[in-house]
Image (cartoon, rainbow, N blue to C red):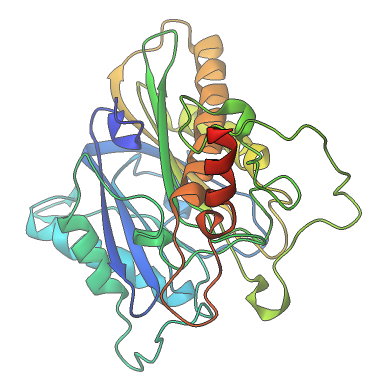
Length: 338
């Protein structure tokens, strides 16, 4: 297992990163059309084709999901992915025509210091096509893809991923672009809120702080106009699920954001979690098995959030937000050496 969402059979991921602009796109590619659903919790979402994922809608399966920076400009990323998939002959058949099904969601990274002077030519369709072409089993974390321009209330955000195997043998994975209005850290750090769920030191092995402070009265939040945020995630499993069951998986997986970010689902965020089922392994007992998969998905997503922040590095612009590494890596090394 790579500890990536691509441990789920049938799932590939590609990134396209533009450090000059300070933005990027991540594409989750289904090798065969997969059952899909979505759960939207944030107060300011930006999405494409999410109505199609209602369990009452006609089309149950998607070809890919596009996660993009660029605010509403980034919705064009899905167009680039569609063009690339159409060139491969992929898509929902309508007579002799094929229409690739590519839902997407965007996050706000327009004020991170990059060159956003694209005028009549936003880069996102191009970046979406490039991310599709890069799709594979291995992909970069941190300041990469949709995580390139991400920030949080305390340290640089980024792209993260994690996976786990359920006792039933089903695989669950997540990929997330962490651009939260809140913080992934307890207090001023360095401990990650997802620390209790960490596996094999995947984000530093710091555990949890010895003492917890009361953050309720004055939680960490992004300041000024840079408050605009949004965390985007995709969770996937190889289980055979209906669209209704996939929706429940997405709903339960949202708890992973609450376990790793505080505050979360604010009026300033557009938090979105997609769920994919590649239908390789049936559920033996549908209700309890789905409950267990949803619980595992929430922990996997929490770990992916922390991995995103731990792997992120500051953008090469004046005033770019400092990363967890900038603040705490030296201190962590000192603690390890005693």
